[in-house]
Length: 262
Ligand SMILES: C[S@@+](CC[C@H](N)C(=O)[O-])C[C@H]1O[C@@H](n2cnc3c(N)ncnc32)[C@H](O)[C@@H]1O
Image (cartoon, rainbow, N blue to C red; front, side):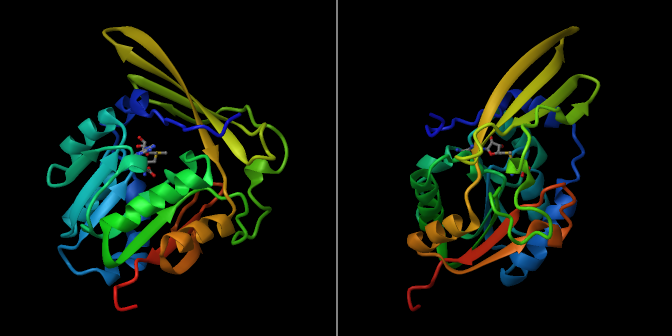
């Protein structure tokens, strides 16, 4: 019943990011230094898929890379353009993205779990592959059902109780955000993320509710999609190795598009 296209609409939540100082780059950039940047020459072109408010492309620009941020949310790209004026931006659903080989590296965090079947995931990885130069690096994190790399129990979000307890409350002067996770559909490894925000506009609080649906694939499923598309040298790391302090870490995939001579 859930396995339909999931149009993950993040637009209503953009306002909360407008004035955020964001510490995301403090964790992501050092990880990218180790996994990606040290293999690239200065001026290399990096694509960030699901770039949100442009925080990461901004920091990559500062380090001398050309950057393009891609996102399906117009509201977030509006913020990103202001935050990272030296970056290019593309408003597009990655499932429909068509580009000739342009990028030396592609990065994405927390986006690919929104694609609810393996056919969609294959389309997305193929679109990435086509957009990359030979020898390009593809680095991404996404949720996985079997975090076998972790010391703890496999993906705790599917190990037991349904969790309706609000997580991720965020309270600012003009914006309040609450997220709840429901894991009723454990067999299918489907998780619902219920997001509620309140925004103060002209003295009146406006409430917005959105539900996103995520599929947690097994690491082996993700690796086999990457292989089928043509990626090579696939390695999987634990995001906690790179300073991720969230309760449930994610696998971080690093792979390469082969060169013609390989
Ligand atoms: C959970 S957020 C992650 C943002 C950021 N990468 C991070 O880790 O903080 C997901 C982002 O992906 C974007 N997104 C969701 N579905 C998308 C799609 N089909 N194509 C392009 N962007 C998408 C959303 O608009 C949002 O900015």
